[in-house]
Amino acid sequence: MDLVKVSNYEEMSKKASDILFDVKENDKPVIGLATGSTPEGTYEKLVKKLNSSDIDQNNITTFNLDEYVGLDKNHEQSYSYYMHENFFNHVSIPQENIHLLNGKAENAETEVKAYEEAIDESGLDVQLLGIGRNGHIAFNEPGTPFDSVTHIVDLTPNY
Image (cartoon, rainbow, N blue to C red; front, side, top):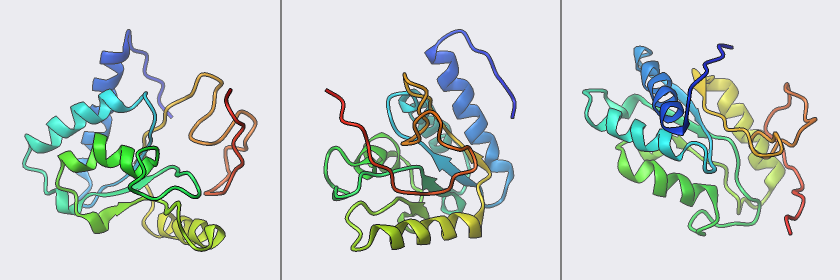
């Protein structure tokens, strides 16, 4: 892991988008994506980079970190909706190359297992992460082992 220090959000967004964009050196890059407020500037800059380059977006594959169990992909609070609004609707990555967990899967455990197997099969060239105010990464609260894989967690209500 490389630690990169930046001065502000704008600089962080640019640096993160540069790192994600540089994965283009791989003929078929596989990128792990995150949600939340942290990566919004990164997505804005990455959209511009991808759309102003000659990169064949048909070769890009993505995997997202998380989704709410029970939410339909079109629900405005789902991470599928978030990703389409903030990134996928603005680029031409083929739908079949976009991997998002299905919050409405008939069997959540089966969905999680199949998702993890797909990640294991393709691997990830780079993973975008944000760190929440309490130190959480995705739905992994502080104390979650770093070697954990895709899993279902109960969220603590925020009042």
